[in-house]
View (tube, rainbow, N blue to C red):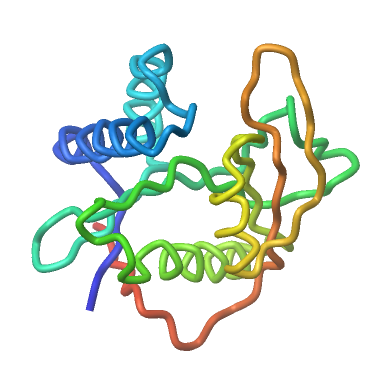
Length: 179
């Protein structure tokens, strides 16, 4: 069984390696996302999320195979908390390419949905790049609904999705408790 736990400073090299691998794969697919113009910004955000204890790592047999960030801070370019209401927000879900197709991403989404419900939030929300239609279809296939698409000058993201937060009794990810 795969497990998920909060990331710590020792996990940063693995998390950044996942980001680098994703950047390379996206470029090979011709997807204009996380290009070199964003690499240091992305790495800084990953380091910050670890420091704020918002980043999580998924492990399988002692190997880091994925990461995700959860927090309660919406990107105000895309979400309107005064209208949309409260939610838990998912950012930077990265799965090792060699584990692609194993359902790791879906397991993370179920775990995050359960966590949102457990923490009293009505929704799990995320935003994705407006031009990455395959990723948008992925979230739709995993129970998210498209809320709206925001076009903000200088920002490439803006396709906003949410999934109702519900408790899930048969989670495949086991959350490790931390001391």
